[in-house]
Length: 595
Ligand SMILES: O=C(CCC(O)(O)[C@H](Cc1ccccc1)NC(=O)c1ccccc1)N[C@@H](Cc1c[nH]c2ccccc12)C(=O)O
Ligand SMILES: [Zn+2]
Image (cartoon, rainbow, N blue to C red):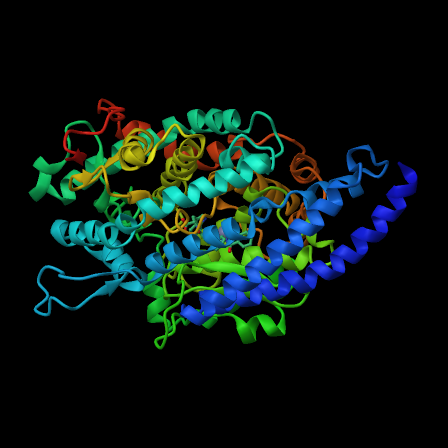
């Protein structure tokens, strides 16, 4: 094994140099398509994606020709295992191109869809895109019918057009997974977490956090019944919340209804959007504010090219994929963000989220390309959110002048915790259910005729929401959420919502914090920066449990820090909910799916 191990090491060096070039070309073509959705750019993107696939397939075969499981050097073995894991590139050129084309088409439908015939519009041909128009309506309107129009129209012009494409697409993903030795594409996606019991782990964590979510849901439902008293008879008696009332197109984060559920309504809330607008914040200022937080921890600043090439706002002269994303060009110097930034607190948080991805790119940029990835996908999603936990504190918002009149008393503390819960606790079941549904599609448990029925069964059961209007079995409401047409796995965000509180606690301890966990701000702590920086430097070169243990002292994902963080709010919610009904029926209310 030693002889060819030396040869293998040589080959891996050459492979790495070549991969950087082939992968760079592919990312450039993908960037050009995502930032200018033309037929020409789609063809170029498919062309370079096929070239990358041919290279990955060839390299995978070479890697597999070595007996790498018996290498002495376990790091080299891990590298070969990753080179051999080629995903869809295993498909024939025809199948590969077909799945690429289907994904690009679904992405284009999603990114260019517009809703028309808005009630009250004199011009019925006036149409509204998701970003920023429909999201703005969902975030700010309290008009039941306007919210219902936006919610229903978006699904009719996006997901409804996709079920046939998605069925064919899922079939090709499963074909690739099968050729790579996995049961199905869900099995392949779960393999990235390198633990036999990953699905069980997720269920265990969900069951542990469910009581917290049920308390929040019960309180929010009661408050929404007051706000929408004029439609009280349209609230299902099953205890589900009508999905269009939660301030978000997918009911996945409820921060936009904060004013209706604030524990001490006479005291100021923690959503600083108005103050940002009053102070003339711009997207650039938001990016610079975020970068300054990272560098205050001693982390690496954004590169010159980052500032030149990032797409910060929605262009007005072409179609783009607006959904936020961060881009590693695999040439160790070109890193970008693409997002359609609006000036608001939630966009300030998203900017930190995206910059967290870029910081990870910077920290692992000198590793072999195989290792330029998160310890597991949840790690990558957690970095930016961890720093945003500090930025969101009243301490920090006061320090940067966005919270002039905060009164730091028990009421203020609860108002803050509620604002955080509306983002973090509300998200948990949503982060969990998307891939529960997709894993069932890939395993065959959910067939096309049941796509929408099973989707709503899960939305009703896990999230306790129901559609404000009957849905057809032939609709495809899953397709109205970016990650489904974009084929971006989603359980990573669920995992991130657990890990980010473990990382936060470790950073707060490193910074010598003595505040309660939810009031900890690690701003300017080099020790905290070193803790998270060392985790990022590892990339995916070691098992994530090793990286987690080095930073937090445990190899286990644990909801403990999250429960500690929200402790005071849970107590308050239990008092407020005393004597009230908690929870909702597992089945959807009558009329959820209509013939
Ligand atoms: O989708 C995103 C942000 C987009 C992303 O940064 O995760 C992006 C998704 C994506 C993946 C692949 C192709 C295109 C888009 N992921 C990345 O850009 C990315 C880049 C490199 C490594 C890993 C992820 N957030 C989720 C939920 C979410 C979790 N934390 C949040 C904080 C603020 C706002 C939203 C969220 C959502 O909007 O439903
Ligand atoms: Zn992300």
